Image (cartoon, rainbow, N blue to C red; front, top):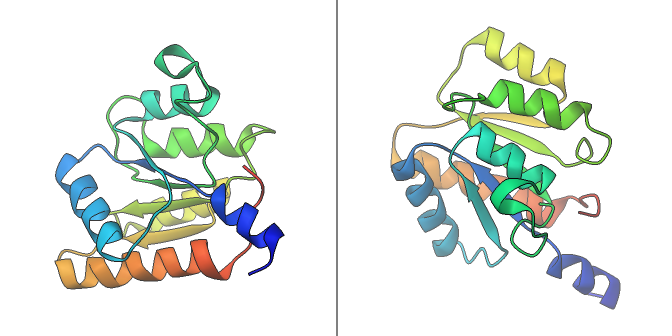
Length: 153
């Protein structure tokens, strides 16, 4: 790995927008088992996520809320739901280049269509068993954090 790649790798981070604490804990536990060492930030609802992304409210300090490299978002969030958060992200000049991956229990074709229409980069359905969840998370991390070059955060 050359110096440019090494510096690039140091700046990677993930924002997980997930209201289900059990899902978030399972997700981060799997990531740790896979030796995922980049910072993971967590927002439990859409309003908190927007504060984080726009660095407002309790997230007004950029040290606490740095711009994430990639966003993993659930659709069915309390308050401002995931669909609305995606719409705001993809309409904002500073945020729209951040890849957004939907991670939802919904397999509703309308949800999938709306998400891609709004500009999400990928849509993954949450599996019900831990084996499939582990496999999906491993694929997600391998693709987004090893195989592709992400935009500067």
